[in-house]
Length: 130
Image 1 (cartoon, rainbow, N blue to C red):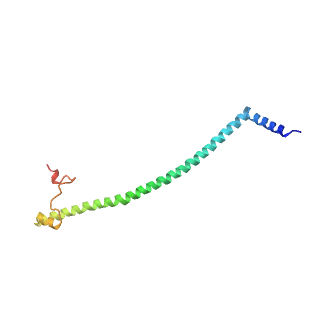
Image 2: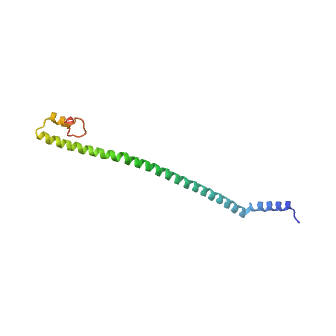
Image 3: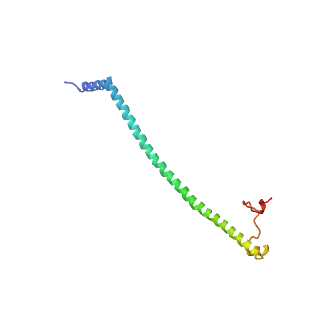
């Protein structure tokens, strides 16, 4: 009859035999593959969690920038277009009133600028003429 010490020693010898030879090599490869797969799973879980975090933050940042742009730039653009239309209408009105015989002083008293502005980007302004 064997004692507990003998059984433990036999188990240790069996474990030692498993580590040698072809079977030991295959068990070593299996353990390496298992650790690699476990590490890969951990990395993919971590990357997935970070991906969703980045997408959530990126989506939030995109939403904030887009709404800020819409709320500021679109009204500004509309105001600039409206201002250009008002200037064109005023030029037409001033030209028509000058044809009717109004003087520059009378037009200025009515609130119109009788003279063309000397500052501008257009090539038809008097300041750009040589």
